[in-house]
Image 1 (cartoon, helix red, strand yellow):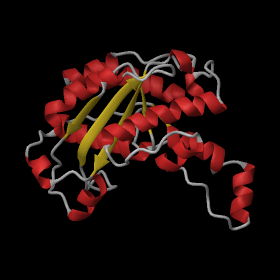
Image 2 (cartoon, one colour; image 1 turned 180 degrees about the vertical axis):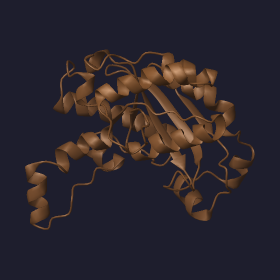
Image 3 (cartoon, one colour; image 1 turned 45 degrees about the vertical axis):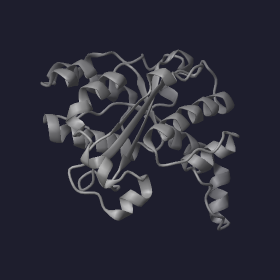
Image 4 (cartoon, one colour; image 1 turned 60 degrees about the horizontal axis):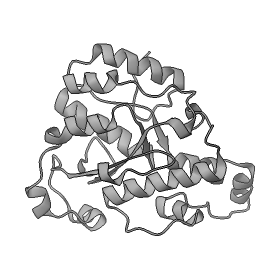
Amino acid sequence: MFGIRPRQKITQADWQGYMAQRAQQAKNPAIQQFFGTLLPDPETPIADVPMVALDMETTGLDERRHGIVSIGVVPFTLGRIKLAERRYWVVKPPRPLDEASIAYHHITHSEIAQAPDLEEVLDELLAQLAGRLVVVHFRNIERPFLDAAVKARRGEGVLFPMIDTMSLEARLHRQTLWARFRRWLGRPPVSIRLHASRERYGLPAYQGHHALVDALATAELLQAQIATHYQPETPLNDIWC
């Protein structure tokens, strides 16, 4: 039942069972501790949920061929962003950088040359994520890339529920009857990229494609989304995936 693939849709009940089973079966101590740290119950009001925004810059879009080059994490709640607890790592990917990825994330060969492998920061990263609901903008990057990278280094991966701010925007602007009507009229779809999504809520523009800055931008976006479209009492299982 719990042979979960990174891009497979998983229900809340599946996630609870998967996390509990992995806590029992994990062999690596850091992974065992990660899964053994309880997440909030799915019925917990979102205002009471401890969260952490996660963003990664990678050398491409396919976790089977590309690698992680930087990671940013920002712990937060609906009421407070904990900048003092933020963390940022540049890590060495398994293959050399190419010029296209450098132009995208601006991490250079010299930075990579001095960077550690993800293995050296992995325990600290997992400790930052443990017990918090991870928030990302487009889970099909962070979820499969982290799972693949951990599996390559520890022999077992890490999958966990997330709140995806892009998915929340898609509910509003891609999946409604109005959005379908716009498509029928041949209108271009509303952008749900991070910058465009923030702009709709009056949030300031940030320089994109820096993992720590984008993690902060994602945390702020979720706060705005909940304030505009949801309630502090909204249960976690209404918005996680």
